[in-house]
Length: 365
Image (cartoon, rainbow, N blue to C red; front, top):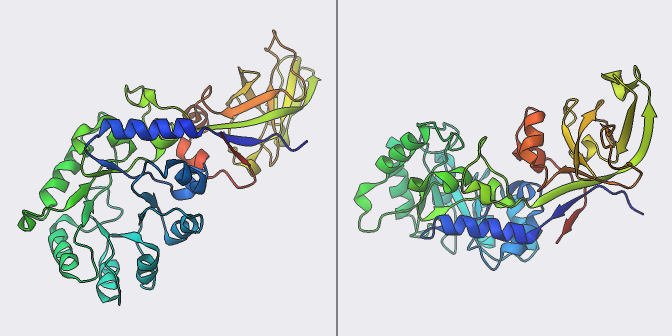
């Protein structure tokens, strides 16, 4: 019998969430973000599951793109951070990759490359997040230089990224949309550039951000980017169920402590279940006492410090069931949202999902 820790990946839920993104912006093309190993879900398997639906995929860097090519994913792949060295431009041509261009050195590398075929370019503009992209006043010149180059496909996508779209009461998103629209090169009519704005939060809640292309990421994996309920986000279906099992059960008297550092002490006679999962599996080491864990479908509190391979859970209050070795444990999934666990740990679900290591087998259903 193998160690019981695994991530169960529901590919039908994945396809449902992609379909929801499409339905919310029916006039947009939808490019799934599969960077960071598809947010921990397995980039190759996710891309394969969506291959019949998606016109392209988005990754962070060329290494992620080549891994998909080696797995026979044939759609165009967008490098969201563009190139890091000039030689990657020719690699992009060879592998049919689309390049984000967000600074002058990236633009210069494309213009100077010796290419046999044109490459497709997405041109980033900084509308207020101040992380990547040309300044709005510099966008027209960058667009014109790319448009004039024999190396660049005629269809250029101008794009930006939102800083606060997950905050439904923050006016920054509307301000960024206005900045974006005002920055678009006006002298290119009638051939106006294609555009892309909407990330997951904008797809779900900011219809005014709909453009030619939309870029679902976190929502694709069934998790809401919002801190509060939202009608569209409530339709998402979690794709990952992070599961393990009880491997030991013991009774301890009041006054005894559990785990490294003895940071939790029983206030009553308690039943403690040990579970085969730890920070070596991506479970957050900083999870505090009280972080919710599902044991036999019942929410129980984590107690004691998370160790590399194990956690301990107080199951004293499971009065209607006798917890035993082999009982199922869910760390997060449809019945226990990853956002809830993340909130208890003072982090975000994005982090918990993306840092799950290869040690945890993914089981696809």
